Image (cartoon, rainbow, N blue to C red; front, side, top):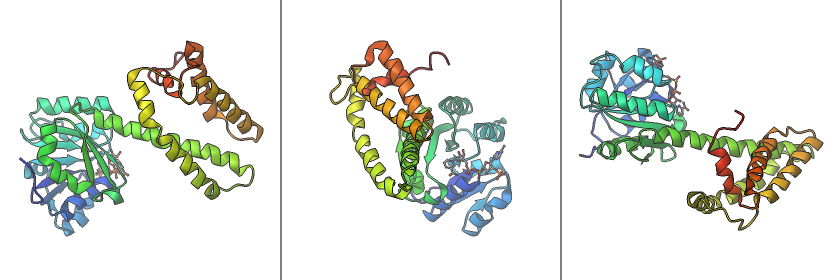
Length: 295
Ligand code: NAP
């Protein structure tokens, strides 16, 4: 079965994100039922054609597909956890942010109560919802995703990552690691250059080129990680560690915070001490793949 633009959908949770989700379903032509603890947040959506359900149970019964977007998983369980709230056989797509353990636990709960369940993660801000720019990740049974794919596509670029319900949450945090790492590296360089009177806007295009160039290494480095073999094709880790030392010394000399490069260097030093100095940078996956020894 595939949904069409006339497939009804329910949205539970009308915070900033839930309102955007419901608005996108309405705009795409889906009959949309909404419910929120604070009912007034539905006013605008009702004016645009949404149906406001009187209770959360009525909202769930109104559509075969319900999208949930609350603050956290505790709120989801508090709201939907009581017996007989969720109709048997309904499909829940939980786009509430959380970690992979909570996602898998929610999937087990849904299984126990006879609901079909996808866990999801929204990698976008509310104004992007309904545009291709909004990336929305889903994990759980493929057939459940396929049954509702065309409805979910009203929200943005939707992807099914796999049957493990924890995958969307894991991709979500992996994306955050990427985002903050790139931003922190850029801020480090900006702070260094500002000591010589170079403003952030002047450095930004240069930094962008470096970030794009480094991003192009990822597929090749991923092959090394997946094969477990790290020949130093372009540079050995011990060479990189010497360059890290320059970055640390320069930062200290010009009065800039050196904590970030010190962290890189500490991890590289541990890998070198473990005998990996002659291998290529991705060998650090062995440091990233375990808790810090003294933590
Ligand atoms: P928000 O504006 O704070 O809305 C939170 C929603 O959760 C409201 O509808 C609130 O109801 C409801 N809620 C909280 N506790 C509840 C409970 N115990 N019972 C019933 N309803 C409860 O947050 P948001 O920005 O919409 O974010 C919602 C989710 O989307 C979060 O998991 C967030 O991480 C994720 N997300 C948000 C963004 C973003 O840019 N906003 C981006 C990606 C992902 P009331 O209105 O009654 O308080």
